[in-house]
Length: 244
Image 1 (cartoon, one colour):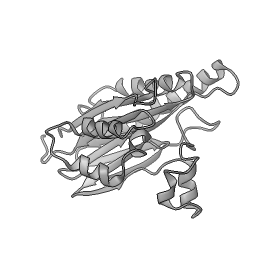
Image 2 (tube, helix red, strand yellow):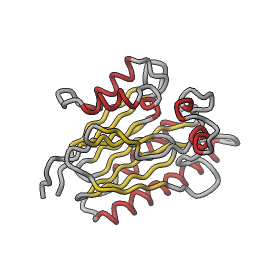
Image 3 (tube, one colour):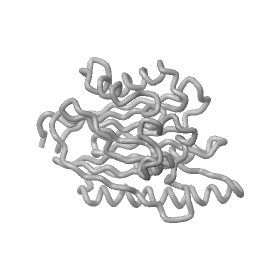
C-alpha cells in the first residue's frame, strides 16, 4: 500500500477568538480534509467539528470505491444533522461548514468539496488549484463581471454559495479525479490562508525542503501577515516510489 506523508496545522489567527476550522489527517487511510465552519455563536465550531468526527471515524481497509462512497454518505449525514441543529436553534439560525476532501489510493486521487476551502497541487514547480470556489465572487468571475485579480478584494468575497448544512436542497459535492505523480504536493486550506498568501507565496513555501513541516511553514507565514480569519493547512506529499 502506498505510504503517504502528510502534515497539518491550524490556528485561530490573530484577529479571532475562536477557531472554527477543523481538519482530518489520515495518511493511513489516504484521507485528508479541511472544514471551515460558519454560523456565529460557536455554531461554526460545531459544524466543522461534526465533519471532522464523521470522517475520522471511517474504518481502515475499505476499497477505493467504498471509501469514496463512505465519505459522501457521511457528509450527507452531517448535512442533514446540521440542518436539524439549525432548526433547533430557531428561525434564521445557520450551522454550516465548507469542506474540501482529498482521497488517494494507488496511483489515483479524488477531490470532493463544497464552499471555498481549497485544494492546490504543486507539480514540477507549478501550482494549480484543483477545486473551484462555490462563492459569489467566483460566479461573478465566471460571468465576466469581475476580474480574477479583483475577487479577493471584493466586499462580498466571503459570501459562499454552497456549504454542508446550508440551503434547502440536498448537498451537492463537486468532484475532480486525477493521477498522482511522485513528488506531488497537495495543499488543503481554509480561506484564511488562501486569502492571505498569494499563489506565488504558496508555491515558494510549499516547494521548500521539509526541514520545517510545510503545513506549519504556511501557517506561520499567514499569521505573520496578520490573517483576518482562522487559518488551516494540510499538506500531503506523494511518495517518490510505491511501498506495496
